[in-house]
Length: 301
Image 1 (cartoon, rainbow, N blue to C red):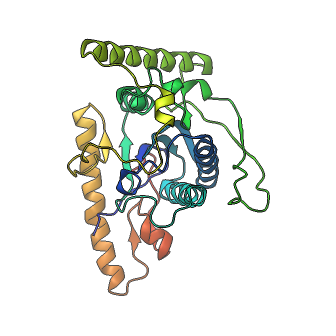
Image 2: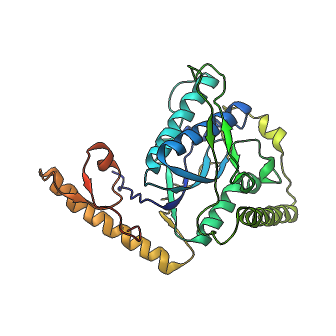
Image 3: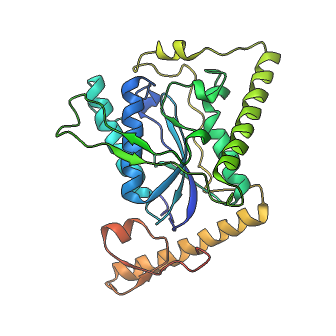
């Protein structure tokens, strides 16, 4: 049984999930771009999440967001389900679209962690040697240049979205922690960081005698393709990210306290105490059993 997650309002998180068998069901064609962006916007608006970054690789998306109300599990449920149903319909397949693992969910504890994870997200296709610049990737993405610009997104006319779904208006935003900068300044700050990271990757690949395959090569792959390399050894995704050991260890201790309190409350609830108050951030039981939960304090604990 998986340990319970703890989702609190205001957390900035990095989310990801892989397709079943790492198949290229998210191959970055025009249909996939429209589906992912539409389902992302729909889920974000419904779950009150603010999107800062997106990069959709052929078999997994990377998303950085602020979970404004502690409902990112609903966001991922809706985004994953809508994307899976539409893509399966388009490519004419049935069965599981995503793997059977929990989605990756890492809380970014400070400004440095947010910055690092955004750059990691955007440079994924560059690091993989597929394109020289993140902007060249043909898949669905949200880059710094998209912040503050309303997007009108409609689903593809593919026979799956019946009833004429109206377009959604959705606006990506810069991450928290950079409020001292105006929109243009924070956008240019991150664009420069992204260019620097792209240049470092390109220089390293040149030293190694390796180039970039290019978007045309990527688009030539079938959605049935799977990576030829074996999957990485299974390991737990970090629940928290920060290079500040004190901050990271504090978050780990707080999570351990949450688990201890959760276990006490769950045992009492199973014994019939329906008035027990679960710790702040409880997700599954709050949504599916309507248990009472303590509200987060001013520090988000």
